[in-house]
Length: 315
Image (cartoon, rainbow, N blue to C red; front, side, top):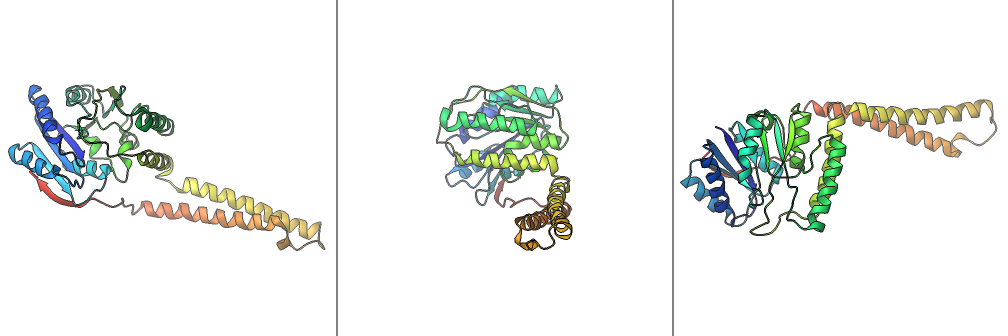
């Protein structure tokens, strides 16, 4: 199979039939063998009924419905697990991603032998204050932190070589950082392509300002995992030793000072340096233990809450 199109969605009943027709038209005109995988992330409108109808009428349409809203990362993970195309395309269901970009994305993966191509919505039709400016700040921070030089990390329109999606684990809110996860997994051939951004035709955005707050928190997480995920002792152990050394140095100073210079002076426990020494050694010990526990956890690492599937179609 040439192409798998994975589409996570939440309450997009108005756009689904039009989106399918558009994708199918592009696929037929380019003579692709393909499948379209809809992941209904707990929609409360008529989305699943429409998807079920499309699946019954068109064997290339496959679908999964979650029991509740688990988030875009879990939806993508479920789609990646069943995708079988040589090239996997992800896109949003709100018609803001243009299916006409698929042939060129496919060519960049299959002929240029890239691992991942990320879309760049250079010209956007979103609110400048609500989305554009926060998005630019977020992407700048992501570039500086991760070392992956993309302009639009969160663009839903991306193309992957199949080996990439089968070797990364997308969970939590890490869908924004799939290129970073791919890089960390050893897939270094990552490029971007300027893609056309469509104005929203139906409904309203499902994301609020909290997505940028969560995005920056996840950015810290992905930075830490990238730098110290395999060896947390290198961070926590080093900090622990440093803090313990500071505490021990203060304690040694107090002891020497008391023994040789101020034998009849104040008690050691009455001096502020004593509490600095005690606190620093306790913190150092705790940091060292945290690094040790982190190393143990790596041996039995589990992801967060997994999705639960309510129904399937054509699977």
